[in-house]
Length: 147
Image (cartoon, rainbow, N blue to C red; front, side, top):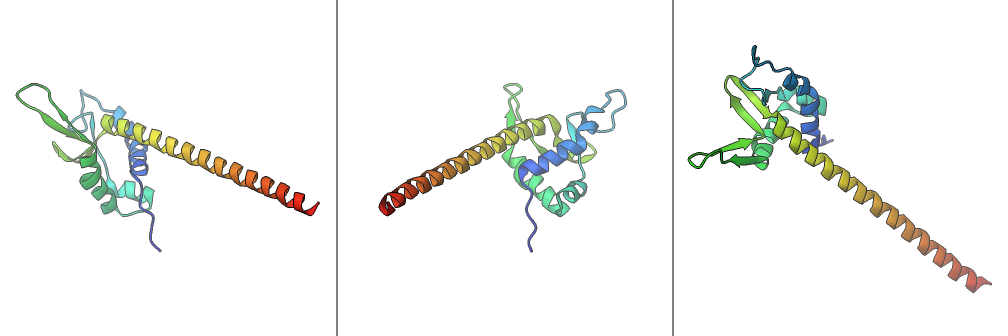
């Protein structure tokens, strides 16, 4: 039996929940990582929470999400840099997420998910009302033929 593939929303939500405290606890006077905004993550621990393989999580972050969620920062007219959701190496830290950027992407994914669920629920209710209406109309027609 095939295991389910975690969604972008599930992956980012687990990362957010697991590493939010690490992000907040950064101390400029005694830094534990290269930069506050880049938080190193453990893909295997994330995968364990999602019930999948660590390479699946790494692959999704590195090959898919990092390219899907990136932007170019045009700081000045002479140079620009690309900011990605996930970086393989930041200083001595490996496998880092741009935490504030990830939080923004996560918020957008949650809104999309809510909209999808609301639309699906409204559609289901509309179908139920249509079926009930059809049954009521059919019952009226049938009873008019019998009486």
